[in-house]
Length: 203
Image (cartoon, rainbow, N blue to C red):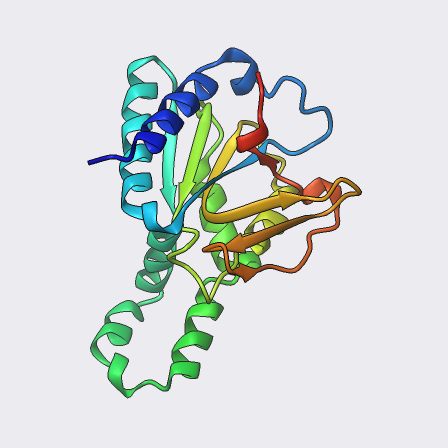
């Protein structure tokens, strides 16, 4: 059964995501339209179902929304380069460091993952993109790297990253992500890379 707090979150996000001011990125000034919604790592399955439900509800309300899973994108990249089957079949013969390096290579943000993510997000007609899978691509890809790589893409609609952990912004600038509430990322100092924390978002 869905936790009551997650039910409340789902309804709150639905009201935000369907609002014209949010969809038109009103009030963002020069900041990029990237948002982060945190949740407890223990709520991973519930969060995925919540996102699926939001996509259906928003679509039924006439909003063109895309859901993108980062782990699925990595699998697609591996499959496109004809190495996914080999990795699965020969996994036991790989050293852990070899497997990690292979995954890091094919999840490289500049040459692989971000270009595929941008294609998945699309532009024409899309009003909102919801991104999941931040926890599933750790440790070979970190969310702060995705944030930094997405910024130059000149996104033209809101993009929401669902993150199983904590996201804190310093009053004097910079921000921190803590995956699973325990694994810290390097401090993100550039204000143009600072995603908006939806926990504090007000219409």
